[in-house]
Image 1 (tube, rainbow, N blue to C red):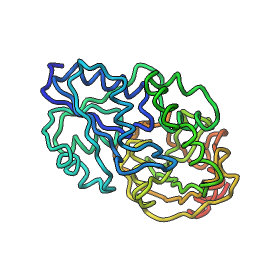
Image 2 (cartoon, rainbow, N blue to C red; image 1 turned 90 degrees about the vertical axis):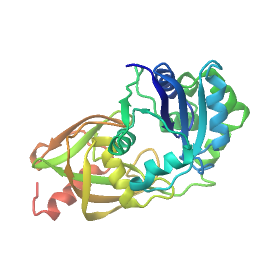
Image 3 (cartoon, rainbow, N blue to C red; image 1 turned 180 degrees about the vertical axis):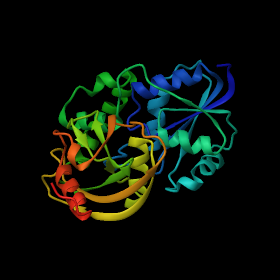
Image 4 (cartoon, helix red, strand yellow; image 1 turned 60 degrees about the vertical axis):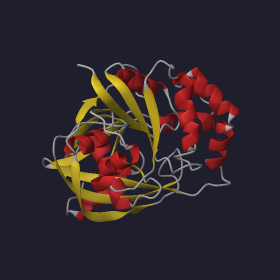
Length: 302
């Protein structure tokens, strides 16, 4: 593509990793000037947002070449998709011509606002900030997934100890999550998980700080299936402490109708549409029990 004047990239960067670095270099090569938005800049010292915006900006600056023509702008949350693009524009205070992103929700919101959006796909394997933070708590090999300067910064800032503390019993409460049974093309949508635990699952994920469960359900459905959903009813709340082997979660489960073309995204490797009689064998968490409850609610039994 011909070089644009000003490009825009946004992420939360908890932490800034090699996938982010690849995206920024990709965008910088195609623009004369790049604006990097640090999302959720008002959130810090939480399990999902452990670093301050200042720390995240330092991580970014530590590994980008000085010859790159860019600026970094903190962008706080407003938890309102309808107003989010305008909020970004007002916060950045500088016009940009093209948006680079690998996030389906960001892509859709900017395209609806009339922006040119370049859908970026990393050459390397999928990297998740959540997976990196999980490695930090468990002593995994997280350093290979972040630039060396970022690894050094995190260690000097006590980032590993902070993340461990935030995930320890000292601060631990059950984590609120949502799952969405999406009725689509005479069946329901299930995703095959890219990350552990592997297997098929109902689309869903964690509720973010400051977000309602309804908003989280619509967002997670969009991120993992690319579908625009309308929540139809609440199926139930599932809170067995053993339902997720990783941590204690409480899931609010919705039934939803969907429009659009289904496409796996975020940490979904594949997706497919199933009926009651064609469910896969390897279903994660307590999702088989949830699906049984769903089919019973519709008058269908095994």
